[in-house]
Length: 366
Length: 226
Image (cartoon, rainbow over all chains, first blue to last red; front, side, top):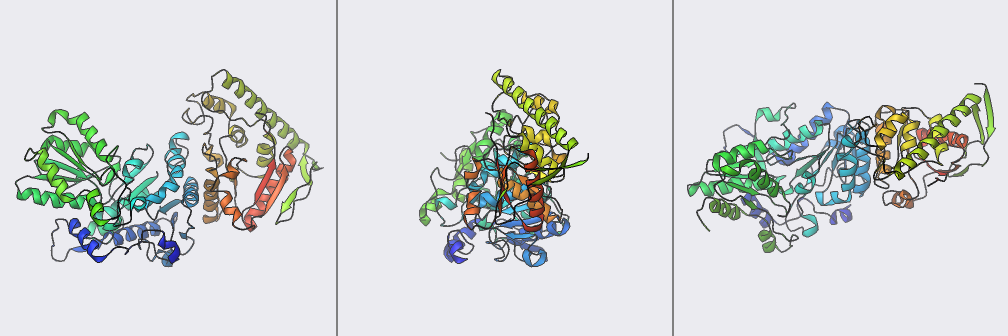
């Protein structure tokens, strides 16, 4: 088992100092109201899957190490013990095989939750995600629907190199027939995963390994087993009036940090957490830009043909006359992810990059 | 409807299991229905070929004429609650599952009346109400999908099976041979695919085997005309 895991990025595989560096970028503005509950993203995902499996016997989990090992990142911890091997399947290392089986099971009406150890490995199965799952409802004129969720960590981790660090949001979000979600907080994780599992169509659920251990305050409402967030609706994490910053997943934390820094300099930034990459909440984004007149879009993935590019196009198409500055996009560097820690840091957007772009949009700097 | 027993021309060959008997039970009405259905399928495919050559059918058009005995013999052995999934060579499988000629031709010619409203085309015929799950363009994709269908039947404790059909092209695709090279434990059957009665016998045997013992691979020797 360790031999198999040695091939893959595993929870706990980075040093404590790199963890601290990453954590400092992730702390968002929170209110520590006395008595408010907190939950890690990991527990949020685990509880969401648990509750949906409990509510619907057709829901089952499959993937590498999801059962006996309790999940490569412990997201499926306790599920094998609770639901048994009939509903929690440890698969062999064959994404093409088990994804195909999952899609076939969904054709027949079951509701699989397929875990990719990271979305880099989903490329082995992408034919089934796109051609067998996403397109079937259309090709069959509505006869076949595919109620499947593909979930797992997406984007860069820490020090895992080029083949284990890619962000697939832009790839999957370009495909009609798929829904693509990207949670940030624990509430996002719970509400969006429950929505995804209940959805009758294929959903690509992009998590982030470095967020799994992050704790967020969580409301009583979000802890209820019927809690669900709407798909296709972004969340305004922080209201502002001078510049709109849109982003998703881990970068939401960076954007909130950037907004704090900008506030010190008198710039009021509105931070939008997309939550849903497809369908994209163009209405919320455009309404915000019409209010602030400035757009900075942020993502971790490669710049060309990225999610930011789509948002820029949408804003230019729908809100051009409201813009007071050119649209800005901050993305990962156009290079395969390097391994050395200093190079990796340079290849990813940092808080300073977001601050600089926002100031540029406000004509406060070159 | 008086029962007739006919011996298949070619014996069955088996691997890791017993072969079914060569004596097939049938009736004159069943044999006549075989002829009618197979003739209809053959004429459909020949007409489709002409339409394709006249460019009234666009894109791809993979024809099944020559293999009619397979579609018809299989249907005689199973129910509409057993699932079928196949490759892009799906026109006659669709007919076998109860699809109408008009819906098939409409689909091939891109009309709204088509079985997929004109949105699928030749390779994407489906009939969900008869548990026919398509119609797949990517070679070999239907194999793990078919396993998934069978998985769902097992999960739901239904006494039905899935027939996953593929050709010699898919037999090379990674998802399939990898499983079988690991250990010689899946039983197999070799059948004369040009004999509808042999096909019927083999499919009946395969269904019983699958429900009791698990997957079985059957090689039907047939040749298509194009």
